Length: 537
Image (cartoon, rainbow, N blue to C red; front, side, top):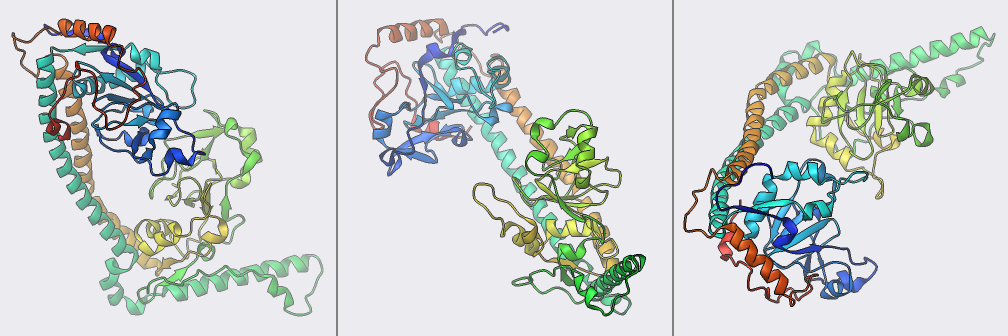
């Protein structure tokens, strides 16, 4: 630790502060390990709060005795050492009840040092730990346990540790209160946004306009009928020209039966629409062009190993957000591969929907989208713009409860849930007169734009809140936030006693195996009031 410590402080490796414990997973094949378990079994999914008093999973005492997991005594410091969340954070917590852990966690059962203080210190050094203790060459983000065990912890005198933990608790409580207020405001903003979107796609936003222009509008139903009739007539004309070029004169109209009418939607259970609106399927929305409805290449047609940093863009689920297109996350393929997969090319103004992994996100591709193909996780629809504006169809997915319930209520598959073409073709989307679609988009955009300053302000305040937590921790562990007392015993003396106790304490088992209800046998362990652990920081 390069910076000079405050007077009376000392440093020590993390694992010298108590017993270093690992975890494990009892066999899922042994029913007696999991059925009616009463021992909390902590995994990274539980490490979202600073104090652990329970876990989503429980195991039996038989599992503790017969598996690789350990019983971790209460008031230990738990740390995640293997998980995708280590890409951005280093979760640390203190368990207020005895627990076991899986193999992705480590714990130090601290003796003589305040566990809350220790957890706060590790949080204050999270980014340094992620940088210096990162394990290289692993597919999942991991912390090298040996480096973490040897990580130097700044130890304050015992009295000052308690004052530090109490001060941080006080300041974090104020920050928590501010964050709760921000969350309430954010929910109000989101509620207003959803009400605007719903009003837009249910006709409420344009109800008065529709009444005033009732005699001037072509209804959605009439518009759909006219477009579908024009498509059929265009197909028949093309087919006649093909036959004429081959010298064929049709004897009757049976050849017209080859025409495939677009599939109508399944309107069972869908709500009533405003007058002059109609439910339409994506098949009916599709433009009369080749491959108007297309999913990306499957299997060996496009391998993840073929992605590269340069070349032609590949549009996947990371590019399709909740209603908007994001050019940020980019995978690319070679020019040669792009030519092989050109039939999967995305077109400007295509409507996209994600159908695998993350399901139901949509966007409209911008006019200036670069040449790109889509992946198997995405379906693209080239829409007939004389029938429906792509942005209006996109708005229907974002704002219509009826459309969203169709999408998320028809996901199929358990191991790889998703949507396929036959399912997508059954969905109904509200269609209004084309003039009303334009007005809906204009009015909703105007109303939603009023939210932008508020949403930006909330985001800024949330960033400041996160920065305040970091500033509090930084100040505390530089000795600048809590007053020191000349009567405090130096930390060096405390560490000497801890070392002596650990050297002579032969009764304490290294693996920490004991009944969840048994008391901690270590007399050197600091015991804190129950209400201290129940407080939130």
